Image 1: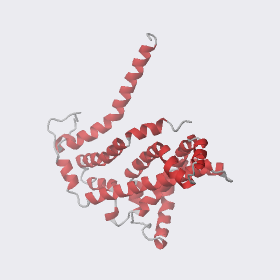
Image 2: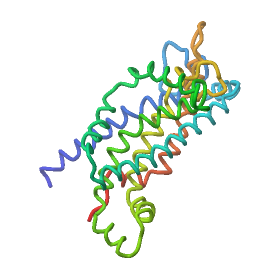
Image 3: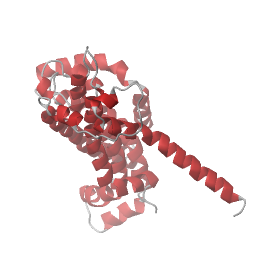
Image 4: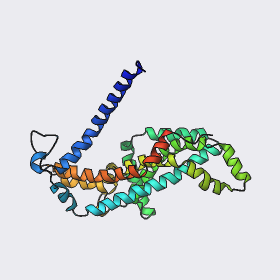
Length: 282
């Protein structure tokens, strides 16, 4: 113990240092949101303020359609999380429990899909959304569907690959016992398998929610004229002005955007930890 204790203290000190470095930008964002404009624009910034102000938040909420942008973001992110989780669960079950030709090829394609940069696919997807709008109502450009569909597609490869391990960890003997007791395949799927892999679903849903909630590229590319369908990241553009950026408003809006992510983390914290820690053991 005497030999290991210094190494343990060093590891704990390193962990605290890393946590401080990671949390400092978040602290500075919240601090700048509460600073008065004179302190935000000061050439000698200080890591504290003695005169906190809510003016930046008032400017954010005074922006027209800010509440609508917020609701649009919730709708898009919520739909992506639910849809991608259900599709990924069914797909992961299929590639794990059933044997079919090119199963390994399909799994490799999931990995390859993760390697393609989103920026490289934005222009082709722009034309795809434009063409889909002519044949499928609610999916074309300037609709929330043009944001939901791409995010589901980009969330699925990672979610399927991760859930595959959880489904595979569920013992086949449990499935056989359920069938012997008279359970149908559908009942086993939703009443037995689904609750067991739920921690994995929660873990993948967190990544889907964060990527969708913070998306700016698709929102800027696919919502070209119907501003009423814009999402919350687009509201930040209002504070970037030619005469000077409103950094207080930018930080206040960013702080408001962070709150739903924190709430989502708090709600799924317990299952998230178990989901990242492992799956079911035989």
